[in-house]
Image (cartoon, rainbow, N blue to C red):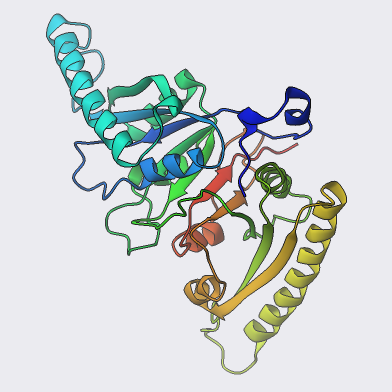
Amino acid sequence: MTLDPSALPQEQNERFALPFRVPLRVLVAWNPLDTNSGDNEALEFAAWLGRSLPISVRVVSTLLRPWPASIGVLGKKYKKWHKKESQACASAVENALKQVELPRKYWAKEFSTLADGQNEATMLSDEAERFDADIILVGSNAAASKGRFLAGSAADALMHSSPTTLGLAPRKVKLSKKGINRVNFAFVDERCNESSPGLMFASELATYLEVPLRIIAFSPTGIGEVTLSKGGDIATELIDDWHEQALGMLDLARDRVIAAHESLEVITEVGAGKGWANAVDALKWKKGDLICMSSQPLGTLERVFVGSSANEFLRHVPVPVMISPATTP
């Protein structure tokens, strides 16, 4: 069962120490003119979130222009062109939001905006700042396999620089009509442990939505087995050691969460298999699953930064993902 925070008495609402606001301010990157953008995964992600908690959605469409900002952007012709294109985008966005069945009450007053510039990731970050967004949602590159995520150029840049929580939607992913019915927290990066702020984020969200929390780690085999020297099973030994370490880390993480949320249903699992693809597929996934991840620290800046292991993991996840920025104390 999902919980409608807007229906809660104020004193009950305040007992949830959510690390984000309600309604959640959601910026969706979607371009009606981009024939390579695939289907409406990012918009469907937004509508899916709206089935679980109140949101305020703005859709940003971006146009890459070949000329610098100093040339003609203040002229009457440019302003007339921009107004016309903005109106066309708003019409397309309105139809798209209706198509994904996002209730009108969750549309921001300015639900569509058009940005033009020379760097798509920068435009998305700037618009997120203007909208004061809590999360930016992006869809997969159309070249991705069905149910898998492949970052386009803008998404890839945001995965290494976004100051805002980033939501990733796999291509043509099937989502539960009832919204989020299980929150997952994934241990992927070696610097992530049971004290990770992302784990607390996931546990607070699961508690708020009154859904189970699954804490997961992965043990992909076959990685690093090809070596120049002959003999020795060092890769196998290290993988076995990591598997044992992962089990211990999951136990500590479960204890830490339950200590803070006694009523929360918490389970732990390890996905093991040949390579990342099989390790991820070794776990059972539901249409109502959401994965939360911690970003790697990036100096003293609060930014999303996805390392190589996490990047490889994301290529095989079959459900939507939220990655929160990390900062070094």
